[in-house]
Length: 470
Image 1 (cartoon, rainbow, N blue to C red):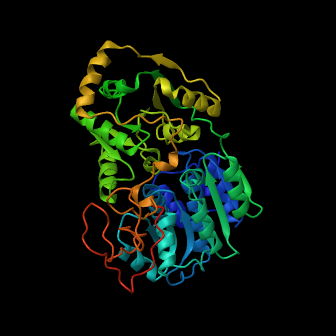
Image 2: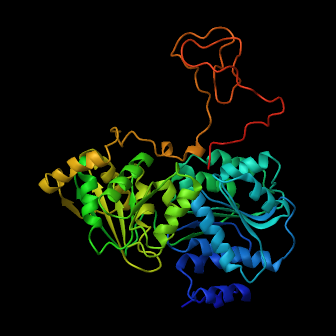
């Protein structure tokens, strides 16, 4: 059996791995590390929880330490792009843990926090930067960062990047990178669009795949319960009350739905917290810290926020609502059964979600064992109480829902708002109204509504930042 000591890694890396108790690489690590150490481009296909972060972090640190030189001012030698803040933090922590005996610097760049500390960290140059695309674009636009010195470019969770509509900023970032660089491309699934993007970024890559596309982890015991939509919350509370559920993640389709489920569970006496894109960075960090510390039994999350959650002892995953993208089912249940452990995944399915269920079973090439809890009188009584604790949200057909609509508030592009006062015809000079970005017209008063005078616009105001992404 292959050991980390057989892969030719530098001694400081082996010491850090020993400190963490790691001796045997996972399949993705055993295949990817030797290839990355040679400097060749790599396309890695591996599900979440297979250890792919170490598969690229270890050989990158080895290469940077072998050719140790100062990073350029406001630049960096390695750039890792991540779709979410939590995942960016997790990747950066892995780099720090593995490289703690090597003297290399690591920084994270993501939205939701102030620019000042990030600019200060970049000023002297950094060996490894882990960033979300939007905030990195901001720094490039402000000239507080540049990509001239990047030697290694890593695109992690490429399929999630595609789901979030990040392809355009990724291409813009890639266009500013040096032509001579190593490219590492990792994805849990390989749809056609991802293959096209990989073809644009990679040059004669080696391909490593440890699982077939869209398969699920064999150690996860999966089941599905047919239940009316309005009775899902009482059913969830009933299941979470079982002592066998030690630590669980509950997936909802929307952010408001996550808040309502968390509110109901707390009112039912179950420790729960919600994490999604509309929460502040501090709220997200506190919720995740409480979950890791065991103070919260159920973490209610949306797909995007949960992508960076790496907790080894998650015993159960509940799909409160089925995802409208079949591949997301694989990502969701992959939050359990990590580090060689077993796990349980339970999904709820209402009548309007049966099409989504068929898509999931087709994509994963399996039939999920099912149970029927419809017309359950005890749940019907509890559902009436649930509506008082947390009123149900307006129904949205899941088959018509766009997963990219469920993005954090800071990912949305700022748009001009119409003038107050209804849909009256605009008078000359009144075109921009009281838009958020456009200047207001002081000469014309909107018909109806509140008028507070013209919006002051500084003649030296900086250009609008790119703000469609985290």
